[in-house]
Length: 425
Ligand SMILES: [Zn+2]
Image 1 (tube, rainbow, N blue to C red):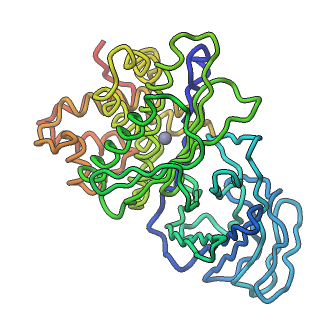
Image 2 (cartoon, rainbow, N blue to C red; image 1 turned 180 degrees about the horizontal axis):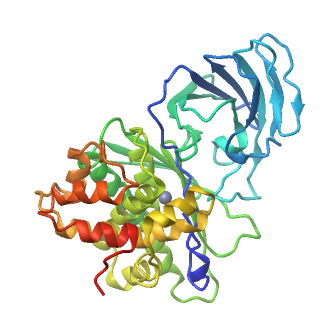
């Protein structure tokens, strides 16, 4: 995520977080195989296998398809491009194409909305759905990324592939991390060049510790035991600030400090510690295939990230978390914001990060359930199977559910935050 324009004087601007969260789908109805060969780093070969022959294919997630070339059926028949779509040859259920990847060494990449790209210097590849894949439908499926290394070994990673109503897919692959840390069953591999500050290692380790706690206490279903964190160079024209997004089992980030700001390092510590934890929350919870609406996905990620930062940062640093993520001025009805967000207004995400996280802090305070080591809410999420069976876009349904676990105290909080009604003055 980024931090919002409203806080242009601050370090961050918000945009919707991309995550590689996944859906239950039918794993073999839609199957992508993305093959990369280190000896030809600037392209990826994609094979899409479908249960039913499509008529046309279109770039995923409003991508422009500019980097996608040579689309054809596996039997060799070409798929001609007409306008923004490709016509699939009749009866073809297996389609192939090539993706051109940008070389980013010395040029940088926007970490909040990454293009298909690679770093030869740091040996990693980034393959986002929007810039690499064609879709025949919005349905979920499976994806496999295969990386053939120069030494002859092949690294294969298999993922669930999200439906169009879930956060988008992107994969980060590489086999030569700069650093690797492990804690409590979770491994963090760092790629690229992390900012060169003496406190960076402590931040990396603390974020990893938070991920390991959440994986143990909160995640329902399969969850990655390894997350790759890639530090990419900011492009020359990028404003000072921190940008990050989450992919499938990976997060990508970058930071440029504002010159002349004597608090720049303290702000960087606060923002990296909070935001990286937030992105990893998406990777961990998304892998299980939960399909929370964006307001829940983003507000929960920020709630748990804020609490992790609270226990790690010095008060002089945590004041910046309060400034960026807990501003009392950011408030409004979450379900109205969700409706606007679903209609394309990504700016609503800021309300989810700030006001949504405040909602969960209030819920945590009234829950009557016994906590686990990550709190009462974590235990409730786990025990309920990610709020299974509760319509999270229905304030009445969520109020009834939470009232059962709070002796009736949660309902008014739900009404106030979700609908903006009955709020205590
Ligand atoms: Zn997010």
